[in-house]
Amino acid sequence: MTQGSRTTESRNHDYDAIRDIMNQIKDRLSMPDRATLAVGLVGHLATMMNGHQAEKLIAELIEEMERVQDVPPNRKLSDARKRSERAGRSEQLGGGPEGSGQPL
Image (cartoon, rainbow, N blue to C red; front, top):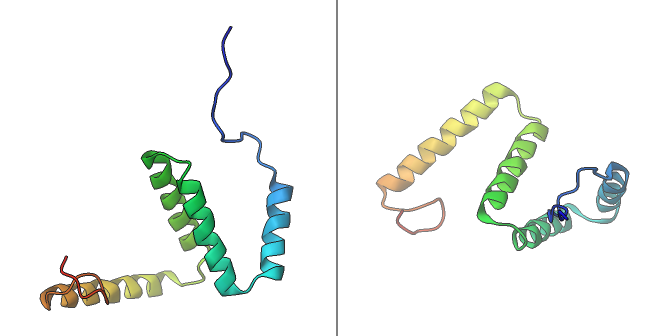
């Protein structure tokens, strides 16, 4: 006899329940509290994932964040260029990532 898959991933998402929870979060929590909840959820999920799954989750989060941002494409390029220039200046001064004061 063959056992079924042990995966915890659902093939049939309950989008109605997800939408209901998202609406409750929007209605009941302030923006800072939503951010705290998001970080907590990601941390909780990470405790149940292997490295590959965690990398996939982070990539999906970045993709979703970029998709929903209301930033014109030409401004995205300008902002990326400014961040790159700041990072270059920080390295020249012997600092690490912005604001850390640590070498790379």
